Image 1 (cartoon, rainbow, N blue to C red):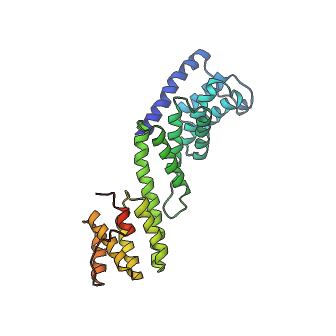
Image 2: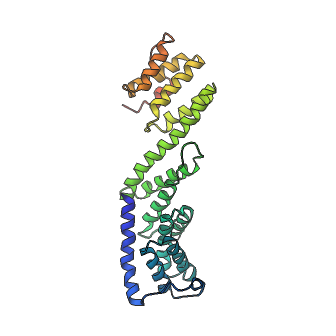
Image 3: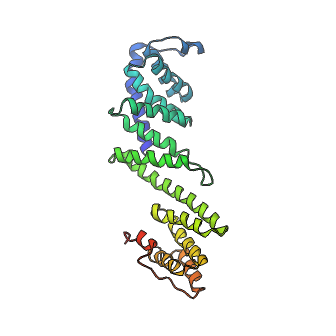
Length: 277
């Protein structure tokens, strides 16, 4: 996985920084008050690295932040930003991880490590995605950040992993639309339901929710007496998902109204699928 590659890169930095540890000697963790005392950058960084290697990510993040606070213009401050982001990610402090990674991107957009920063922002949002019963603002942010990784670094391993996560994120957003659409359908608010199911068909066409969305559209149009649109929805469903149980349900619904699936090429439903063979 791409994040394993990211971790490998972090370990690579650990090896590089290990040279500094040898040259400058071991820096003791010391008393808690020590972090408020101005110290040499190597000493703070050594402490941060020691904490990171022990898996003490909270303490490591604090020390990496201290590097940037006390020595903002040093080469170590640049590295500390990314390491602080990684440390915070490890303890699910996603907001802090995102902030540190975004700061790295803003200050060092041309740095070779910027790809890791973009990816870390994306996975920090992605891992906060909640169930479809909740607000999907974070899901939308995850989709935006993942898309940015793909756009900026299309040939990287991170882009490959981001594409997979984009598919899952889109499926999640489509699931939210379906949940709301079903609610409106149960309330007999058919036009509101159609708008939600239409969004799934038009904007999330590669997701697993499309067959059900087409069936629900058939239900809504039948309930409204718009039989030609119901027929078109069922026909498109049957053509693209012939083995789907949802098609069987749509077919039974129409035959119960003395109608059959029949595609209307002028229907928005047909046009939405016109590019699909």
